[in-house]
Structure formats: C-alpha cells, structure tokens
Length: 475
Picture 1 (tube, helix red, strand yellow):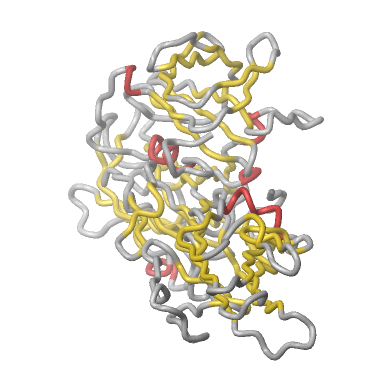
Picture 2 (tube, helix red, strand yellow; picture 1 turned 135 degrees about the vertical axis):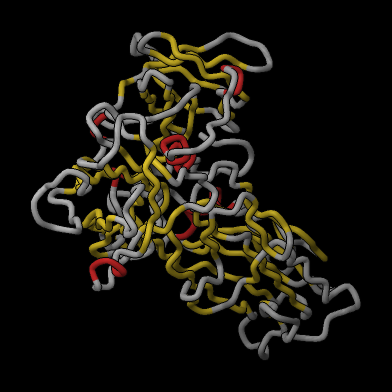
C-alpha cells in the first residue's frame, strides 16, 4: 500500500502527526480523508472473504465496525473488516493514515473525533499468515514502568509529577529501535491550576536535569507541537511528542513546566525508554532484489539488454549471476557502452542501510590478453579511451556505484530524512508526503563499457546489509 508515487513502504509517521498536539488544528472535510494506492492490495471483507482493492484514490469512511473505501473517480465502494485499536488519538476531524508493518504487511488506520481508532490489514501478496495476530496486539501502547522524575520527595500541591510515560512505535512488531517513528505520551498530575488552565512547557535534554548524559528523542521538525497542555477535571495533562531515537540504549525526555508566580520551572525527566539495538540482515543472494531495485537501461551504445550475438551468444543487461543481481555487457565491433539506473527504495520503518558490496568481473576469452573493458568509476572515466560518444554521465539524481564494500558510515548509498522532498543533486528522488523519518536507498547508477570485440564485463551486487527491528523478511 502506498501514498502516491513514492511511499514505497508507506507513511507511518503521518499517524504520529495525527497524534501530535497541534495548535491550531486545521479543519478538514470528510472528503479530505483519502488514501491513494498505486498497486493492488489484498484486504478482507467483514464476511471473511478476500477482496482485491485496485490502485486508485479512495475516500475513507467509517461504516460501523468497518471502513468503507469509495473510489474518487467513481466505481463500486468496498467495505473492509476493521478492528478497534487501543490508541488515544486527539483529533478534531476524521483522519486516515497508511504505514508498513513489514515489506508486505500494510495497515490502514482511521481515527475520528470521538476518540475511536480502527485499523485494517492488507498485503501486496495476498498471503495470510497461519497464525492471525490481532492488530490490537501488533499496535499497542507500551507504558514505561517506574518513570523517572525530578524533583523527588513527597507529593505536595503544585509539585508536578509524572503519572505515566508511554510510547508506541510503528516499526515491525512495535519494536523500539533507532530511527523508528514513535509517539510518546507523557501524563502529568498534581499540577497547580484549575481545570482548563494551559500550562506552558518546553522539552530539554535530560542530562541538563540529571547531570548524566542520556540519549533523548529527536523531535520531528515537520510535526508542529503545541508549547502548552490543558489541565483536565482531575488536574492532569498530557504531552504528546513525535520523533525518533537516534541510538540504542536507555533514553529519556526532559521537561520544564512554567507556572504563574513561580520564578523557576518544575523540572521532570520522563523515561527510561529502552531502545533496542537493531538486528542485522545480510542479503547475500541479491537477485531477489531485482524487482525492488527496478534497474533499467538509461543510455546505450550497442546491445545493452537481451542477447549479444558473437562467437557465442551471451545474455546481457540486468541478469542473474548465480544467485546475485548483475549488470552485464559484451563488446561488439565498435565497442559497447551501457548505463544502468535503479529506482529509489524506501525501506520499512526503522530499517536503515548498513553497507553494500559490488564487484566488477571481466570476461575475457581464454588465451587473450587482458581485456579492455571495465566499470566506469564513480568520479570519471578512468578505464579506456572510448569514441566521442563516451563520457556522458547521466548521474543527476543518482549515486554512482563504487566497487568493493562501502559502509554507510557516513551514508553514501542512502539518506535518512524527514524532508518533504528528498533531493539528490537537486533532483527529487523521494516524495515524503507524510511527515515521517524515512531511509531511502538512492537510485544507483552504473556504467559499463568495452572496446575489444567479444570481451565483456559485469557489475555484480554481492551483498547488501540492512539493520532494523527484529522479525523482518525481505524479497
């Protein structure tokens, strides 16, 4: 399930945006509650029958204990089985959001002003697991036991305390891992003020209060949060924050509350939030990524895909090299030059790229001297002298492939960002329609050329390493 052209793994943090305390709230009409699918998604109807929902834009409506999707361009509405979820969503108008639980399992969530939150599950493949896990178990608020708080001592009138600190993560199985989109809810009580009073607050590093360094929440800059909360009839208030933790370990959030008539703020620390170290996934049989990367020929001289005919026929283009993905060319009488470009790949929530390893392999007929064919380097043509057609590098909006293993420290092949439009050389490579932090593998650019007849070269993707929440599977 996707939102428009580029949310390949969907918009988990849009729902975090729903949950954020925004001021002022922007009113929407029911017609604004819409989602767009760019691929067919398999869902389940209330009677238990499977249904294929075609790629188009849909208006989302509540229909009792179900959700009704109405095609915006006309057509027959489809009613889907929904499940009530244990989430608190302070919205003034109905809102809907899509996000990925894995690379195949996708969720649509709908919230209304009455506080009801329902969700439906779908998939690209239509495969249903043998053990159906209720969504209420997949998405659940997790409360931090024994939240830290300062100052200590007895509970006295006007001495604010933290009643609870809870979170939920949109990563697989709700795992709290680095760079997973999360929403924190901090409930405070014993705050001096009458019901309806707005209490000013600000978020500060927890170490500025405790004197001890601690990782803390990176707040999502695209989610506008209020700088105050309102006391209810019981003198309690809630702070909702959207963002992510950038490292594993014991993390916390510092809060300063400003009260009228008091020169110094009350200082509290919410947490600890235990952020798990990510799991490492080594994808060594890379041919499985052929469809995901969507490599295509972008420029060619000679035969760049299909069959190269010569003393022997060779398959060229985007091919399988054993179990690995490869780009392969073979030279003809005037030489061959081919450029290949992949599409951007948006990784599941909380997943980042660890490293990529490419290898160039020359294919020379037995008994001949070293072949004059190679992979063009990332930063220029340093292989051989080619005719005048060579030297064009269509690299804007891409990252050139480098042979050998390249670790993403610092990132080279990927970018992690909340930007509305993620750019590479001024070219939009990903349209991040929802305000979420996402990791995108940039479009990969590779250029091969040969000059001597019947000599070849191939660029092989040997290994790709991903890190993220446990329990994921990849194509």
